[in-house]
Length: 386
Picture (cartoon, rainbow, N blue to C red):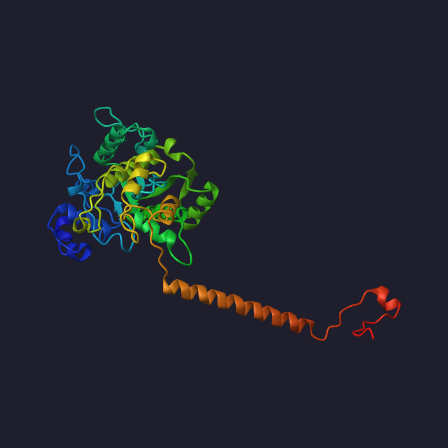
């Protein structure tokens, strides 16, 4: 049974509508029933990947109309996690996994974590035509041209011996986590959890992982210890610039970078922009705060004083906060926050009273010691001079 058949009944519940489009079903599955679960075949894996990127086939230019996204995905829950079909060779001992991300510092669009894995015994093997089974040329994707990255991704998806995975953290998910009250969930922790979620999903799918190569986030030693506590039976290599040193990590970098770029290009805005006749330009450049095109886009698309930008923006980012506070943002006071502030002040006053009472109790009945000079001369304290 195919994804289009298995998800036809659940699509309406997950996305609010069932259009009957196979791409819709693939996306709905990645957000729900197939989240972190491997696809059954390479054909389905590739179709689902193309659906995420807004493509029909390898020669198709990504378009907004083909890119689909559940309309409530920006309101609650986690972003999707994609896992390809599992190569047979990956179920044997000796599998290496590489993990890298794209879009970490961007103020627009998702942060995408990618993983690629294959059995290391295949690294030097060749097919009947003398060509290497595992494609060559994987390097840090940020140092490659877009055309080269796309070509490598196509080779990766066409190679039956390579599996891949991605965890997509949308801008709204990042903002919710970083701005939540009480205990903020910072980007380093999100990054660590995304990597561990992919490793766990790959393991649960029956992959016999031996070594994971990971481009570090934060302190490499601390990150490695954290991973080893979670997965004590795996070997970890956690280094800066690992995506330029290890093939699986480089392949993961390609998966993450191409997927993020295509998702950003074909982003489906969930706001009712048609109703407000608002046209959102897609000329936002790289999406990074230092990019002049990104700065101009944020200035041009700050339409609402309360809700500000479309959900593609990470509201928790310093440039976004600064713009809101210094430009057109409406200041909103929430009663719940005021009550919390009042409670905090009352708690502080209560603690001060308790401290004062305790100090008074400890001093009670205790005579202050006088200096020897006064005691030797029998000098006493007087309250009246006359």
